[in-house]
Image (cartoon, rainbow, N blue to C red):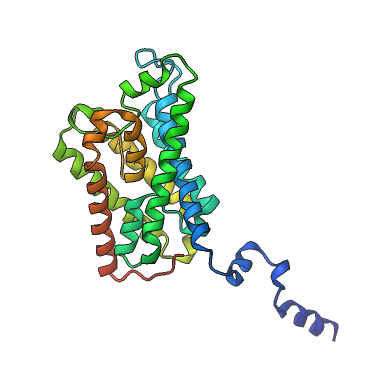
Length: 272
């Protein structure tokens, strides 16, 4: 009798208040639009602050011609990847962790996000990115000539031709940005389509962004994210602003094509 009673107790459902976070999520109401937009603004803020901040403050330290303590391209690539991991882990459960207009539009093309949230997501991402670059600019004013030097160097902005770290032309930069953004979105769609990968998703997506930066920092200073490009160009001067259209059009085009391809292949929807 005692064993039967014990077995019966084990089968009883666990109260929501005493359950794990994962179990409570199943009973939680949908997050509000304001919470989603706030999460997207925060995540994009973190991404730009971590990635662009590392590029501006730590990539070449103490100076470009004396870079003994600088983190270089590898450090910048890791900064973008790590901040994306942190952002998705922190607020991805609220908004899906896009932090990138191209990702939002790619997921829309794939039928994996709600169209009614798209304008709010993109606005929140732009606001979060510009807020982060504004913080970076404010910190730079704490050093004599710091802001002017960063602006002269392009403020870690994206570019082609004269604006490309490696001197790559418009066509090469456009192709790189479109293809790499498409790959990034395809990875996101694939890795979030299986429940088994949910806990690994932030790391897998963050490492993919790191790899993309390792490939393309010399080509375009790596955008694959219009919000990141806008945030840098705001303080980068006339050249980055004049070339900004490439880093809006190419990533969105690549993301949309990837989303449509994944949708055509019939990937099952399991993500948030």
